[in-house]
Length: 242
Image (cartoon, rainbow, N blue to C red):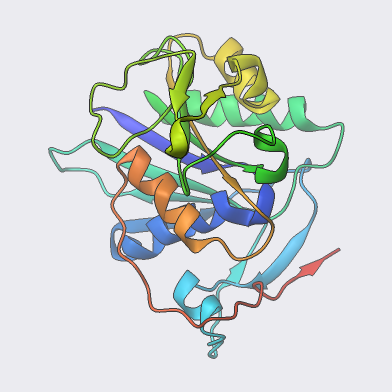
């Protein structure tokens, strides 16, 4: 049976982590959580909150704590492809990226994942030129086996044709970055796992609360999720970096 692993990069606005947490919250009754210990991440501890609890500032009495790295495994025995989720609650220590990825590759090979989904978020202020027009919540998608290059996902375009430029609102064309502009993390994975299908999704955001961008990532990757009620203001999940 095909197995997929979805994971976030620690990126702009924590949008990738929010996307993964939304997916985990939606399937919480079908997932088994395992804490993974890595010496290559900053230590972190905090309450293990759903996105709904965090966005509504609801922190009840609970025994579960969030650690830097959790693997959520789906239950087997179904005809649908299994999707597991890896959640990163703290960044990788600078200089240890390659060591962390080597550990991740061992996990991927051990669990026999056939597909990897990587979520990323880019600084919208650096994403395009002054005259370019970028459609809100448009997701950039690159795949090592499904695509020959980068393109912007359209909701009404199932063919995912690849082009050097795509048109935004107002008729302005926007130059898309090459695969070398995706993320070193992704390029390292592609080099170490040449036979594994890897799909990279990135959304451009400004710093702040970007729930819609997190939903856009999940929709682009076709991962099931439901919207949660949230307050206008958001406070980050409390925790302690050591």
